[in-house]
Length: 130
Image (cartoon, rainbow, N blue to C red; front, side, top):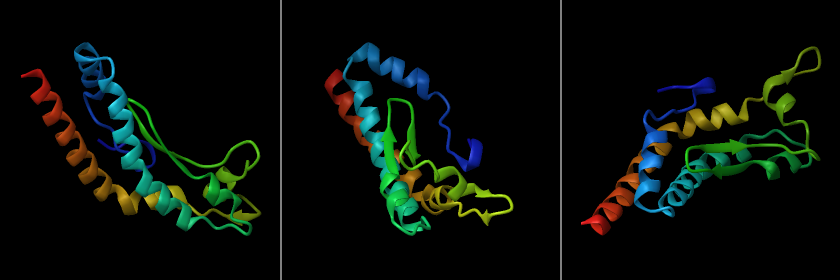
């Protein structure tokens, strides 16, 4: 299912993570590792698309993975211009949608990687249960 800005949403993920927790409290942490691995190629694509004079903004683009979310973030308190760089500043300069462009370019690969990694994970979990 598509979410905001073309994001990918997986129906039933919350219930899946809760079920994993019932089997072993450490299993949901592995979902975080899978999510981070899925987000990393998109983060790399976003880094390469950033328009920047100094390169400081590109250095802040990072992949993040939690039990339920794969996310790519940019900017921080010391580099507060990620939003204006991405969306633009009316009357001053046009935006450079580096994050959404990277997501669009890497979406098919992210879905393929997610499917492969979760399949391997579930196969391993299933073998330990039987």
